[in-house]
Length: 64
Image 1 (tube, helix red, strand yellow):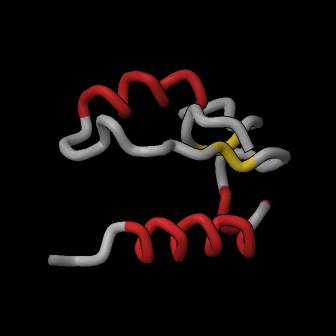
Image 2 (spheres, rainbow, N blue to C red):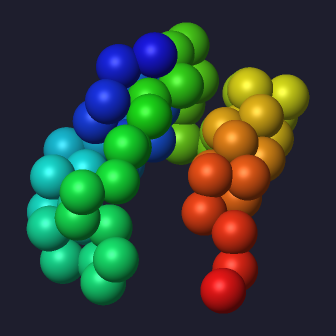
């Protein structure tokens, strides 16, 4: 996993990762993992890995 955000084979939003990282409130300063070998539909291409990334994020950032 590298740290751009999304997946490494997403032809639609791959190049938008830096833009989203800088404009989405709260995204700055957070890790933005990339799921390798997945395309635009992460839930279909790498559902288990996506679930693990989401669960890790929730554990690391509990609601206040």
